Length: 291
Image (cartoon, rainbow, N blue to C red; front, side):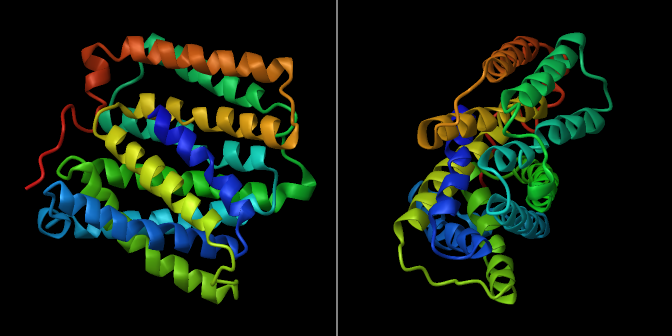
């Protein structure tokens, strides 16, 4: 989960560095990564197409949701600050745990509730000044916020798929379903699709999709929605670190305090996850079997 969030947080940086349109960057992220995902799945003995019978509808909808998420987030990245894009694009931080409690028909325990409160306050403080909404960046902020909602929908669908599928087949098939909508939308927006410089797109595909999304889908089969939702706040931490290291956006005391609150929330939720209440929220307690 930690590796996934660090890798995914780098996506905004690579989108900024590409010489194609933002939606086209999302298309290339999937177009480059998907054949490698299928090849890797085949190399470890998985058969994505055969093992996914009965799940094609869920995977197709998940792919479309992820395509809409990427398109909306990438459009927001080039219209707002890197900090805003990272924070608002991860509004699934709260939406996915809420889904977990609704699905399990139960309230969070006191410790889990405290973890959510700490994570929310920490996330708000973390990017304090730079992540505040502004009139200049309102459109980009709204795109990123909408992307967070779509990301939560994608998580819900992929959690269902992971009940029966191993990580690689699930990710490969949902990625395949994501490619056509992104290409159609990029062409409809009259974006530049063919790149002159390939390395940012290759880095985006390898780091964000193969490593980041691959580790995230793996984690969906082993961790509860609450743990996953709070761990998503690692991405704003990494985004703030990128801003500090590359753009001299130094962290204030409020940012450091927010990071400490997020760390405390992660410790609390891991402690509370040992009980049966946390187990009830898990999409699947063990490694799913691939038929």
